Amino acid sequence: MKRFLSILSLFVAVMFIIGLIKLAVSPNSNYSYPFLNAKLEYLKKHPEYNLYFIGSSKINDQIDCKLIDENIQGLKSYNLGANAGFNLENFQTLEYVLGNPSFKPKYIVLELQDKINITKQNLKTERSFGAFNYENTVFASKFQKENGNYKQIALSWASFVLNVFHFNKHYEERIIQDAHNRFVDETQGFSALDYSIVPRASEKELKSIIKERLESYHADNGKHMPNKALVEKINELAEKCKKRNIQLIMLIPGPAEPDAKKLQVYQNALSVPVISLVNPDEYPEFYLYENRWDNGHLNEKGSKILSKKIVPFLEKFLEKK
Image (cartoon, rainbow, N blue to C red; front, top):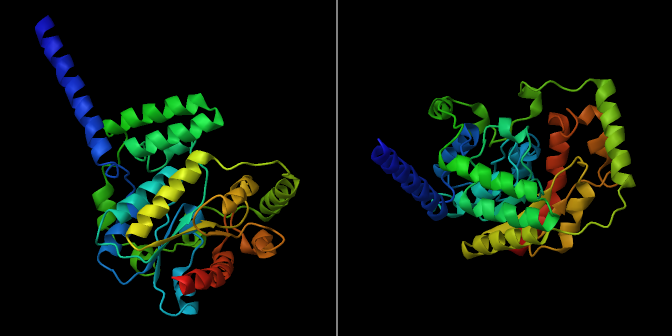
């Protein structure tokens, strides 16, 4: 019996090591989100799209690519946003695009965030632990070390271990991917919250949230410093894009989150251009009740306004290429 247990323990250890090696060698194979994967599969078959937007719900629910294309000649853009897609998920999506010759973008607009922390809310999202491949886990550790958050470093490596064993994966993914979703192929990836199951915040609640966010933005007079690990990571991704003749552009979409000013300091720290649409004085439309859906998102009307605001910035960068 002891011999059997010893052999079993050895077998488990070997399989675990193989799993670690597999993730290290192929770091972009574990992030599993059916809706995003359906978008990626669609893009593989449509190389005519020359600009990809990558990010969270701030992209998925707010960037109307058809509207942008109507205002920029020669542009064909696609919304690769994914709800609850934060830095690690977005980096993984970008790496996947860069590693696959089926994707042929000339430009990639990546949402600028500093959301790395593992929270109870994170663990309930589609991605689960899938974003914690080896490369992302190393980055997360560097990021958290600079912030002095050692608990998050431990949680990151615990997530990596769980990812090795494919913990909490969605078994129904293929069924979801095979089902037709008009937001994948008919709207160029854009899906406004007006057509979602997410209820709109009540007028009283929403106006209170908008007021609170505006007060928070104007009261934030702290001296924010960019996280060096994040700067290094984005600059590395920019170099990888450049090798494939792709221009990387960072985007801070409106409306302002509580960390808006903290993100704005990256504008002068990165080697790539940054578009920022969070300043309430420059973009007051994003802080009107009629253009909002909930605490951090615009409705369809607001999304169209935001999409039009992006046009002159994109035109400027496209002219330089």
